[in-house]
Structure formats: C-alpha cells, structure tokens
Image (cartoon, rainbow, N blue to C red; front, side, top):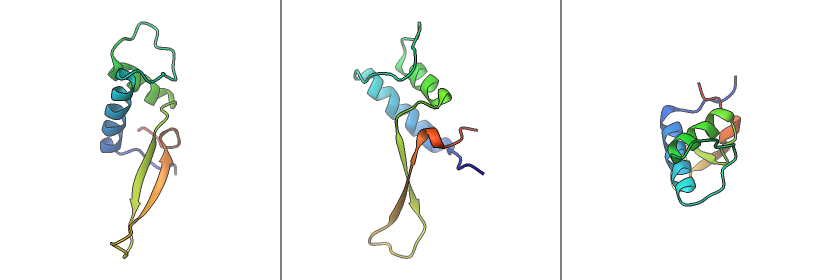
Amino acid sequence: VAPRLTKYERTRALAVRAHQIAEGAPTTVDTGDLRDPRDIAKKELEAGLCPLIIRRPIPGKNLMKPLYDYCRLSELTNK
C-alpha cells in the first residue's frame, strides 16, 4: 500500500506551489492556455510532477528532537 497524501498536505502543497509559480518559478507541465497559478499547480499535482517534498513527523518518545520522514510529493497517492 502506497502512502497517501492527506487533504491537509494536498491543500498546503497546492498553496505553496501556486505561490511559487506566481512568483516566477518554472513549471513542470505544459500550461497550455492556463494562466491561474492555482490551476497550474493542480495540473502539476495531478500529473505527479510537483517538485515538492512533504515532511511528516514520526511518532516517538523524544519530544526534544522529533524525527521526520521526508517524501517526494510524486511518491504519494493523491486519492
């Protein structure tokens, strides 16, 4: 079973990527006639080409130095 992208991670990823595109970051998909950065970010996410990494906390007992798991957005399922 592949790890899933939560609705909160999806929303945050779309917002961050749309902001990057609005500030002039290059896109990873053909934008065609799309002009809105939110639509372009959504298209990248659906194509599995969004160049972001998600940081997830790993449950543990050490509260002073928590551990994190890093996953590429393209490795997570979007359903």
